[in-house]
Length: 220
Image (cartoon, rainbow, N blue to C red; front, top):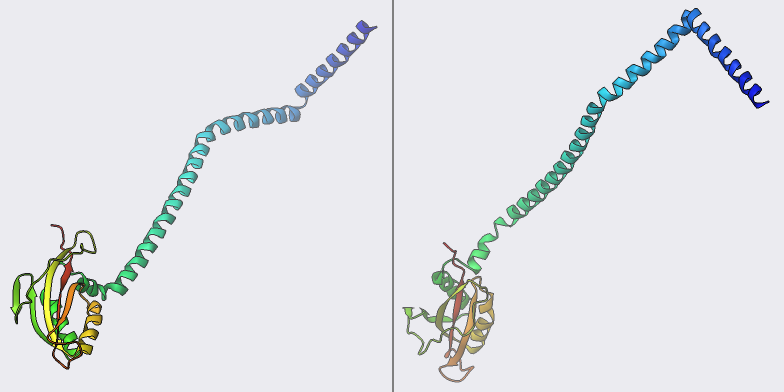
């Protein structure tokens, strides 16, 4: 039974393929369609392999373009930050001289002296003497000038000893002493003393001050 069924099926499919072959051989349209389909498949196969390197190249180019855009965005951000920094510097540039006055490169005792004279005149006091280190610029030097006890406020800075004497009323001398720290150039008071009579005795109060001005020399 099974053998007969097998033979019947074989005969059936054999006739089918024979008929298909006859149709293929007899009908030019079917033949051309099949040839066209095979040609299309063959062309498609070779196109895929031919375009594969190009597709890979395009993919790499797209990736490179994206990377370049990211780099460009970072550069634009940095340029924007530099522009803002430059604007900030330009706005503060006119005030940089205040830094040079507060912490000059050289000791600049002459600049400090001019400030001192102005402050003394503001408080109606007389500047009797002014000395830098062991050099007396004018007047009579104080009896003793001590070396600064405190270390420089900033590492790398230097200090120059300054001593001076003023006289006037005790109240004005006290106000002068309080305003001394508001001068543009940094001055550190080490010692001060009142003399010439009792405190508050008219305009005979003498205030002796010693300390140091600070400068920041540039490294050569």
